[in-house]
Amino acid sequence: MSHQNTTFDQRLLDSFPPLVRPIVRFVVEWLPLVIVAGLWEYVSGTVVPRSVLPPMTDVAGTAVTLLTTGEIIPHLTISLVRVALGLGASIVVGVLLGVGMAQSDRVENFFDIFLTLLYPIPKTALVPLALLWLGVGTEAAILIVFLACLLPIVLNSYNAAQDVDQNLIRSAQMMGTDGWRVTWKVLIPETIPEILTGIRQAIPFAFIALVSAEFIAANSGVGSQILAYGQIGNYRPMFAVIVIISITAYVAVRGFEGLKERFVVWI
Image (cartoon, rainbow, N blue to C red; front, side, top):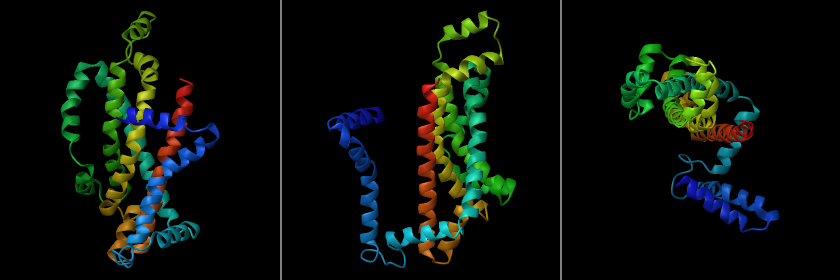
């Protein structure tokens, strides 16, 4: 479905003159956000009291204030460190596990049951367990981010490794490459595009899991600030922090997509 939509969007874009295509692309990408912002502005004070749902313009102004004064920066920095550590750990473990499962029946049989049981569980449901095991703080949040990001990376690595041309592996083995050296020198390089796709899918999960974990298992970070503002009914900064972390996640995804497009060209 996503491929069909991409093809349709490209055909639609190609129907315009080259000079106006960047403008059309910009409008198509940002129009949904403009519509949501307009509806938010209208609903505030009409359908929903302004005290409960502040206008979008007020929330945007508060977000700018939180950033320019530096009030939210320490919490945002802590949250980004947790995302980086949890996501980084899931990349290392997920790639090795996915490739290992594709190449070894023993590894696949050992971890398949665990991954199958873990897959349908909402990772936010594991926050109380993480809190019980690790206590309030960074470690619990990192664990939840790690678990939320692990599966898409494992699955993409596994599928990509299974699709690697076996002739490449045999050629490497005939040249004296064996064991884990085949994994490092043949399999992982060949699976990099799919691995990057798995990481791209995992980034939004990382931010969702982070905020959920920080609601309960942390006393710092953007999630804890959202909860703190909401508990005292200070909804303007609460929504402002939500907007800030949403924009941060969007920038992270788009930035990674840009790096991926440049990196894959050189593979």
